[in-house]
Length: 173
Image (cartoon, rainbow, N blue to C red; front, side, top):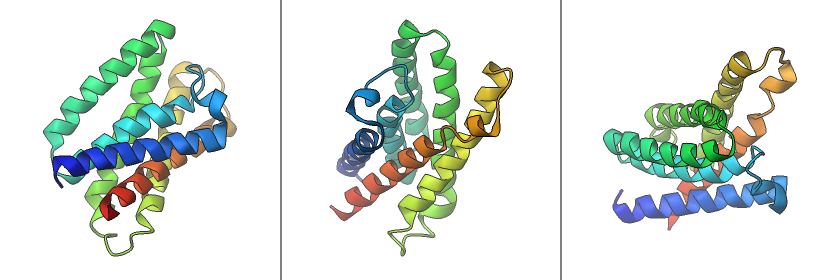
C-alpha cells in the first residue's frame, strides 16, 4: 500500500463515517460537541488513517500519528469540558485495539470474502465499544445499567462499518 492508498483509505473512511453520522443522527446532532455522534467523524478519521497504516505494517507510524491526533482532539475537547479528554482516551484506545485485532487476525483471512470484512470490522469495534463503555461506567458513573453498557454499541458498529466500507472502496479504486 502506497501513500496514495493511505490517503484514499483515510478520505473514504472519513466520508462514509460522516454520511452514516448524518443519516442516523441528523445533521444538527452530528456537529454538536456535547453528543457522541461527533465521534463518528473524529474517530472515523483517526480510525481510517490507523487502519491504512496498520495494513501497511507501520506500527511506529500508527503510534506517532495517533498520539498526535489524540493530543489535538484532547486539546479541543478539554477547552469545552476537561473530563472529556480522558473519556475520549478510553474510546480512542478501544478503537485502536479493535483495529489492531482486526488487521492481525481477520484482514488477510477474509481477503477472498470482500463483503464480509466491513461487517467483521464493525462487530469488532462494536464489541470493544461495549468494553470501553463498561470502563467508562466503572470510572465515572456510580450506578449504571445494562442499557448504559449497550448505549454506544450503535456508534461503535457504525464507526467500524464506515471505516470498513471506506477501506473496501479504496481497495477497489
